[in-house]
Image 1: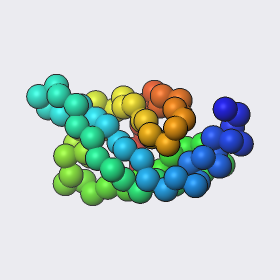
Image 2 (image 1 turned 60 degrees about the vertical axis):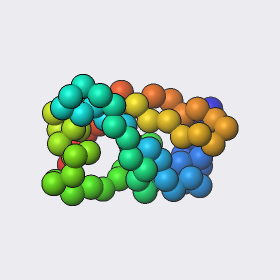
Image 3 (image 1 turned 90 degrees about the horizontal axis):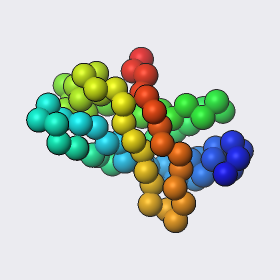
Image 4 (image 1 turned 180 degrees about the vertical axis):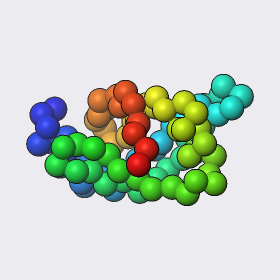
Length: 81
């Protein structure tokens, strides 16, 4: 899948699953609304009091997978801003 196709794929599918690792070492996941920039930065929002935020601050590596018949690439690292 080239960059243009990946951008189009993410723009059409407005939801994704963010997976993280909890304090106990077990995986956690949550459906979130997503957006993307032209540079293919995937953006979603959360509040600082959520488990997801704490998990991503403590352990910033996470996989992303959407079950739309295609497998987008694995995201290696998340940058919180």
